[in-house]
Length: 152
Image (cartoon, rainbow, N blue to C red):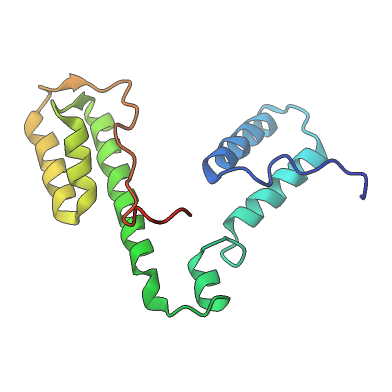
């Protein structure tokens, strides 16, 4: 064990880890040979990345270890909502198969509030096939952090 190579997955970002997990699952489903050690490393990294007790800056860690009051978690809740609204509006644009003329502004407005998302979805409804094809939509604007001073 002391001479084992380092875990190549342990420092991946969550999106990179998800890609690695999907690729490994595809290999397994196709019946391809997969190294037990490589699969174990991937599982260990995925477990570490999803365990709220180990996530740097996670609500669990902030409340339990840093003893911050739970009310300090409100900005994270707001950011999670922004991310969800972003995902919903971009998926709706893709499902509609068309881009509104100013889709970047539509996405930005839609992720700001529930009312903004509702209005954005209604705007897509009103387009009724008169937008630009959205076959290759590359998420025009990722969720923006609420606090620009945060680095985590």
